[in-house]
Length: 224
Image: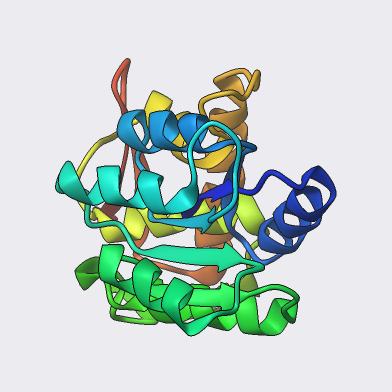
């Protein structure tokens, strides 16, 4: 799952990126409202965390412009402002939730899970395909011969495949969604991770395979 974090306090932003990455999210971090809007308009995110008081453009303005463009991604407002009027303004502008600094990381993670769960394609905590199951809460992939806890990027790649069974996902899409637009990661890293996932599927005895469409991408198919 990919999130955009817009927080102008660099130390806090770095800490949040560490927490979110550790909990199997991919995160793009920006430090002003204009960059936040540009990223949201040009990216493909599952959710956003916006600070209100930011340089160039405040978080409420970013949110309003995002909603005016018809973008329905879930948004959590993260701010030091605690007054009722500020909370109401954020929610009325289209925020899904509101969290006041300082906060506990467990609460932040719970709020993110709650708001993204409201999205139609994220209702089920367990994804299933054939004999394979992926638990989004525990990050465990299970098959007839057992289960294994996936690492961060492995989990995100398998989640993308299981959300789109039988559909070819371009290699560039994996790179963009999981490593981010600003990443300098080479595309062959996608092949390395998919090779590792194939070995795990074999070890789990799952009747599925990751099939390559040469020059296009990869899809999750029932084994034949």
